[in-house]
Image (cartoon, rainbow, N blue to C red; front, side, top):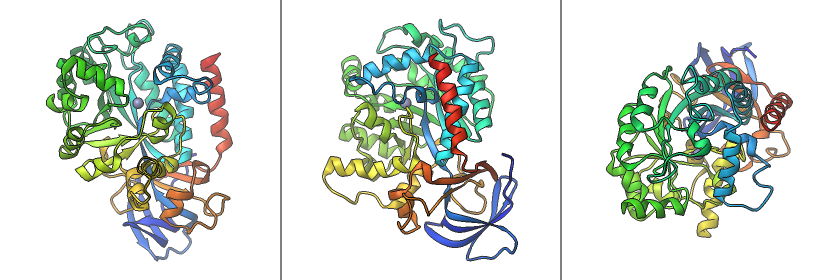
Length: 432
Ligand SMILES: [Zn+2]
């Protein structure tokens, strides 16, 4: 698919905070240069449906997709899920990961994501020995993103401990560079402009090494799993006498380029620290639901000053529309009240790209990259729902995405069967 968009008329589109009719867009290369509601462009292609900005999947572990439908077969806990995930992590080599990630990223594109933040820790060979090229797995992910048409922000992850002073063991050797200094040396040689860093968690990076990662990431996105499980908080309090949020704050990790992923089990002080430092909170509601993590205090964090972003994390579900409405629906269950978020706010969370270091993606406006996601308005799911932002947030599913344009290029044209075939083949290969 190499079709490029130059001029088009969008039947309905989300522009400057409202749905407008007959929006003329002109694209120069990868950038929108004209966005004119009610305009005319004789002879231009007319795009039927409701067009939204490209959505950002701010937290992904691509290989976890191969667990869908498998880890849910028996009763279990977060920790038994992790054992199955480790089994999978031990099976992947660069070629297999390329095929799996290509299929997974294609599923994301078909769902409406144009960018993925890949929280990447599968760095080395199964015994921990680096590949000849120490970035070989990262290259596989970059190649997969190119093939699938998604914009990749690789978040190279530091993971050097199995928990609070414990050495890595088993498949965790694949994740570890030994210590944060050696992680930073490897990180410094990682090619590509769209890269960031990640601290896997306060479990996986010792407290006295956290600042090393933060220093290496200066000026780039820095993501960290935070307080997903009560057990993590308990272990951190036992080891250091502070919450994980306080530990990260005191090490200088929090700030506007940092994202706290999950942020589920927080104290009031934690919420204040995240909000006052303008740290982004990246919620992953469908994964948190699948793993039984709990419901993070999204509304309280936003009120404290923390911007919200969204991710599909383990890919138990890959559907940005479901992720957006889950923010509100989970709050309803937690509080037994409705009306925490407007559709516009939820759409903004879904399209937010700044936590991935991208200031020019996420809006249909001149100067922004030409990322255009079009929902069909005549499907059994979307028909009769108003054809506006409420359709996107309260009705649509990934299956209603008709076309996706990224950087002015058509990267999904509605062929869902091809996406399914590639996933089936790649996942069968992993488990065979
Ligand atoms: Zn994660």
